[in-house]
Structure formats: structure tokens, C-alpha cells
Image: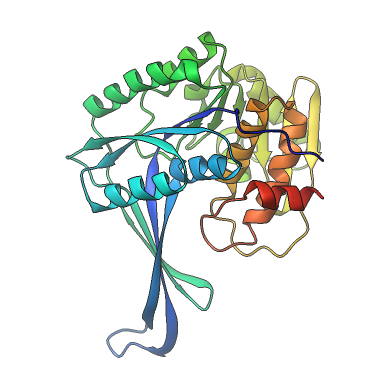
Length: 310
């Protein structure tokens, strides 16, 4: 499968960003204070998370990438801005002094995550309104829009954003969160994972039941497509033409965190580069197969995707 030229595939991403911090160390004893392991930290890493990881994935595929979001006026916000600049992302991060930048701190020992600590709160309405004006300004200069919802409050105006993009003739891809998918009505494509879809449509017993529920939701929300990522079962695209399934790429799974970011980022880049939806899903599946072989939030570069397609 040939990877198209992505150098002019302009992607605009709006959503909840976070800073992923990793403390790596070793465990050799149990604490005398409580029955918990003592981790001797010997190194740390910082990576963009949430919508920022989606942006990093798009940029890794050599697509011109713009990101709009909200951060706190704090050190993690500065670190996130620096990391996105290093990744080649054009990031417009509105500062809100009343919030803290979302940070997810993971403690890892012997390649196993022992603990995750989250620091977060929601942005206020005034800052979100400023982001909406920025969105309107940036919309004409993109080919595809991604709305990356992590449920942190950064997409309060998502219905309006979808409407504006569709009126401008831009496809809108949404990574959803929660059990209220009505707010995504009118988007081009939704990419829920298996558990997220189950929250909305209920359980299914077989493929026919899944197809019926997925098609019902697709029609109800006026979507062109619904892509359900299914972990070890691969991913299934539901459109008006029927269902198209991609089996999971057979390889050792190291860490699935951030794989959904890679899927929607790759989809957007390939659609912006002119590919049809089914072909783009096939490439997104291969990209996901690359990142699950890496630890933590990671990206699939263009070179890695080309190698996976060889």
C-alpha cells in the first residue's frame, strides 16, 4: 500500500490537551511504612498527551498540523508548548490562570505501570469563547478537522464547531467521550472504542447485533461513518455502504495507551491527502499496530508506516 504525499494535508485539531509525565525506576523492596513497593526513580520523560498527542501523530506523518486548546499559566503548560514546538506542531494554547494544566503522572518499574496520578480541573467559559474565535479564523486554512474530546471541558462548544466546519465544507472527525453522543450530531466520522460504544448503545451478542446498533447510531446522528476500535479484534468501519473490518495487526502488544490518538490522527492525515475512507482506515490500523509496540503515548512516523505497509 503506497503512502500518499502528506506535505500539504492540513489538519486542524481542537480538544483537551494534557502533559504525560513518566517516572521510570526499579523496585527492590517493600516500604516499611505501608505494604507498597518503593520505586527508586532513575529517569523521567515528558510527552504531549490527549489532543496534543493526536497533533504529534499528525505531525509525525509530515502533515502541516495546527492545534487549538487551553492550558494553565503554569510550568506544565510551558513544557507542553515546548514539546509541541519540538514536534513541529503549530500550537495556539490559550492560557487560563484559573486552571492547572492537566498532568498525568505515571510511575513505571520493570516496564509495568505501578501508579497514575492525575492533576486537572476545567477551563472557564471566557477562555473557551476566545478559542472559538480562533477556530473560526483557522478553519478556512485546513482540509480536515479533528475534535478530540477527553471530557476535560475544552470542547464546550463542540456542536457549534461541527456546524461551522460542515458549513465550510470540511470533514469533521470526532474522538468521543461519555455517554451523550448527541452533542456530536452532524460530524463526518466518530471513532469510539468498544467500551465507549457499549456505553451508548448497550451490549451486543454477535456481529449482526453490533452492526445493527452501530448503523442505528450512525443514522440517528447523521454521520457518514462510525469507526469502532476493538482492541484485539481490530476495527470496524460502518457506513451507508455497509461494514468494513480490519483485523488487528498481529504483533506483541506492549501498551495500548494513545493508540486511539494514532488512529484518528492517521485517518485525518490520509483523508486530507485525498484517500478514500476505507483505504485511510487500513493505514490507520497499521499505524495503531506500530504504536501498541511502544511504551506510553507514542507516535507512528511516516517511515514506520511505510515499513509496516511494505
